[in-house]
Length: 416
Ligand code: 5CA
Ligand code: ZN
Image (tube, rainbow, N blue to C red; front, side, top):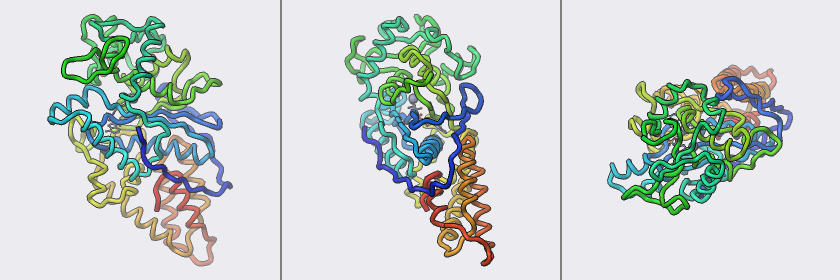
């Protein structure tokens, strides 16, 4: 699948030093410091394309874009892979509900998503992979799971046995009761008769009448959701042979912590024979009017709609980055108004012939981002710099507007 247009990253002066990136790891419930290496690998769960990009999606992809930018600014290579769940129940259900062809629906929403990501200056993944194009890989992974005796059939549908991974449940820190409840809420089928464990995960669904299907050694059908992401990640990301983990970061919104990433981690451990991700990192949920923004609830603010109304994509970026990535937070129009005012103020001040000292603010931005992407601290520093520039006395030491603008572009992805 084509991703979207590349984003150029401006250089900043080599005098700025980058401390190791520290990120909150939900698997250990503590901060993990990224080891110093030449390259990193990051897998971020992509959209299910049955509705266009809303601000919740945008906030999640912006979070991992900051990680990508920080590591890239350190001069490291970031291997970044993202999927598109272009075949799954919600997509088929929405197409039936709206009386449209499911493929047309998916293609139109993927196209919109690409445009939104580009407008928001999100660095594209090197591999942007759809579930459908990955079916041969997924089938191969299921065969491997079968060879390790971790798959069984219920009326021809194939399930992965979660107890095959002795660490099952350890990354999401939930009780079994909590797992059962959340599993049922998020696409799982705990009550299906014939399952060995209610939590066992569907890996292959035999063809149902009227539904699309693809051939496989297990009969025509379509892949389960969780196996999609681990098969894509393990095929498209370089597996770190020197590390106890296969990849560095598994990311997404916090609604994916369980069951999606727990299942992915369990399946990957069987497939790769070691732990999957060093860090499981989650963006908080963006809500509107007191509820999580979601396609199923329909309380969406679409990025494309805001842009079509004339809002600056960079202001959307600032509005979403002004809060701490990991916290659930509500969207208000005032966030966008304030972000627009802030950007206008920054643009005006950066165009002045003389500006306040900039080295400290760039250092503060780097330090704050290295500390689990503390963007509120970044914006506090930038606000102080604005004030310093507005109050500038002629005898003071001046900074470099160009250097600061480049740092803001490189680290925050905000082109001014
Ligand atoms: N295709 C799967 C992942 S493999 C999926 O969850 N698709 S999605 O379209 O529902 O969500 C895409 C990404 O946006 C996921 O990382 C999800 O966690 C995140 N997301 C969804 N809703 C919100 C929200 N309200 N706030 C923040 N992130 C969200
Ligand atoms: Zn996923």
